[in-house]
Amino acid sequence: MGNQFELAKKEYEQWGIDVEEALEKLKNIPISVHCWQGDDIGGFEVNKNELSGGIEVTGNYPGKARTPEELRMDLEKAFSLIPGKHRVNLHAIYAETDGEVVDRDKIEPKHFEKWVKWAKEQGVGLDFNPTLFSHEKAADGLTLAHPDPKIRQFWIDHCIASRKIGEYFGRELGTPCLTNIWIPDGYKDIPSDRLTPRKRLKEALDEIFAVEIDEAYNIDSVESKLFGIGSEAFVVGSHEFYLNYALANNMLCLLDTGHYHPTEVVSNKISSMLLFNDKLALHVSRPVRWDSDHVVTFDDELKEIALEIVRNDALDKVMIGLDFFDASINRVAAWTIGTRNMIKALLYGLLMPNEQLKELQEKGDFTKRLAIMEEFKTYPFGAIWNHYCEQMNVPEKEHWLEEIDQYEKEVLSSRK
Ligand code: RNT
Ligand code: ZN
Image 1 (tube, rainbow, N blue to C red):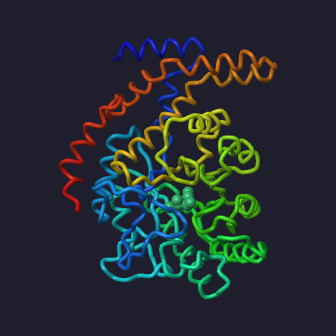
Image 2 (image 1 turned 120 degrees about the vertical axis):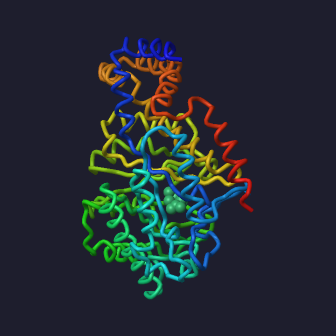
Image 3 (image 1 turned 120 degrees about the horizontal axis):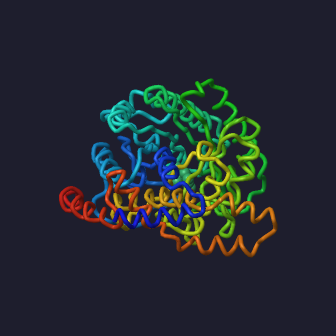
């Protein structure tokens, strides 16, 4: 094994690529792992509602986490198979209220004390999201853009409460929390007025962000969408809406890879975004024919996203989060596969001769640019990846599956 790594390293070094330095960099890139893959976006509210908001989790693989303890335990298992130190992304519905009914506008930091205690033990940071779906006040498919001011106010209060929870996470854990707002608002059919709901959303956001929250602890982002189930014709918070809102209000725009037209890619947006924004956030997902949120694979677009982050020297500017949910396979494996792939893609990006390729493009030598890019696809990348896993004390290659099998037998299979 060691020998394979040494041989591979030499091949990269011939191009002046410092493999050890790449591995050091990789160790310091946190991926925000979304908790909701573990329980199909169920959450732990006392009066739990059906999943709504035009998103869909399909499959009925046994063993989903039923309690916060089980969810944390499953996350720990996944983290033991994923190299590096990462983050956990929570939604408001993962509050722990001790059996008490606490509506979303009333959630407080204390409802997340157990998550914070656990995050401290694990040495991971936390990110957050208000939950503007799976709730009776979201039943019309409208929240912050709802025509009823009372409903709007409820969701405004929920978002403000969420930012305060984000601030609490950041202060407690010593790493700022990214609090991301995504709303499902839209119409199934052709609207007769697009402006009024957008105006209402803008005003609602202004109220939410008027509340001062320490930026050292909480960073705000807004996530757009193209369409959802039941909002096929129109989504209030479109890409242009949030692109402009974020820029005008000095906050982060979050790009979800499933929220664009089928041939439109996030990799091509990153450089433009970075020219006008200090930071940006991602939800890396995998849309298959629609915003299906399949588990992230090591595909061309994932590699291209990673390459863009590396090439633009933006490892500390792009906050990488994941957003997929598949209930048709082992959920701990889903986390492991998707997160390992994200890390793997970043390593792939770090091991490309990016400087030389840039020069070739500047010189107009597109023959060599294409040729080198293609040849690098079969460089011995796998040997470096395996070495990284070994160095980080997680199973190499497919060996992590053995642990998943055991965990399924010993833990998941007893959950009914
Ligand atoms: C929905 C958005 C959003 C959600 C999560 C659960 O299309 O992508 O980010 O997936 O908040
Ligand atoms: Zn998303």
